[in-house]
Length: 475
Ligand SMILES: Cc1cc2nc3c(=O)[nH]c(=O)nc-3n(C[C@H](O)[C@H](O)[C@H](O)COP(=O)(O)OP(=O)(O)OC[C@H]3O[C@@H](n4cnc5c(N)ncnc54)[C@H](O)[C@@H]3O)c2cc1C
Image (cartoon, rainbow, N blue to C red; front, top):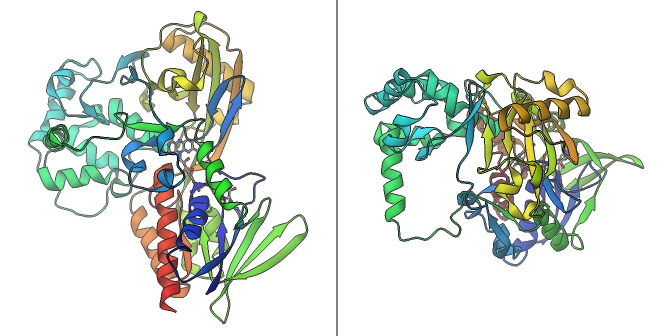
């Protein structure tokens, strides 16, 4: 049976969906005619690996969580699992800015939650009172309410404000360029909710998990918590493209403007390209655009889809700077993060060439600084030159870098980071359930829903394909 499928958006979610659909032709009673619509002139979406002057620069995502990569078959099926690179040895350390100085995050902590008492007891990051308050976690009861709450509220109750503001906030909320007191516990770090349910104390729970992991006979594929692939993350985009480009229609520079459900239950996709407006009919559609776009596209299918507009997207920018090693101080860590209370322009800085030695020649140093996050976006209104100047001033003050970078580049990410606010998951479920009733072969997937990390998006691409096949098999 032949089925027409549309995929809207050519980021990692849409590309994975296309690849997974083609794989399914081998086991399902269908052949697929697939059209992928992408408004940009290139595929990959947020994944952007820029190669210049012997530097491999990830201006968007720079790595993937190893434990999540291991849960999806994509890299193995693309033959890329052998090319995985773990983050560099000797960069286990990360600094945190504390009263204008870099201080190491105490070893034996999990996103700021202590798993070993000794390093925590001696860290200069917290006052004595704050350490005693944080140990209150050992005694504090489970919360009674099972409702979603903010990550900040949950952690403040267990550990007090100082640990949250000085350590946990930049590590956890930094991933979302968000605010810890707005982010949903269940949609971001539900593992801490689970730990509390099981062990009551997060410290005791983390210690128990650490012990179990040490005792486990299962060997991790790599010891690093983060991985990339040789040549950078765009290698994944290129590998998928090579597999699909002769088998599907890829329509670049084509903007989808609306999706309608027809009388015969097919879905018509309206789009605009250089020739003007047109539409095509499909049996199924996978929509992977940011939720503020999706909300508008789906208005004709369901008014409930407008609720997706409530998902706020944060803006940020990455600033790449490259130096000659001879001009630099020793960089002995993966970088640093900056708590909001420090009121700095830089929110985090990855010492790329320490973390990923393959990304620069041995006598060069490549750094990536982040500026701007939810609630701190004034800096993004400055010109590129002004932003670079601010970053240089702070790198000098914080790291002692006096040298002039021989290369500097700002990449702006406007409305790029979905903020999973409290009750995010109920909103997503409500919209998905409504669409499942109105248009069961229409699937939503991607960063705006159930995880914004690259492996989360890959997993959602596979899931969207499985859901569509379930529906098609019912007919
Ligand atoms: C600066 C930054 C750093 C990050 N760092 C990491 C990291 O280190 N590790 C990690 O795992 N994750 C990281 N992330 C998150 C991760 O990169 C993204 O969440 C993920 O790549 C999103 O993939 P996606 O396919 O869901 O969406 P996107 O990549 O946004 O793809 C959606 C596509 O839809 C297209 N589109 C939009 N509207 C239309 C339309 N109307 N018609 C047709 N096409 C349309 C867009 O052009 C885009 O190509 C980072 C994100 C950013 C911005």
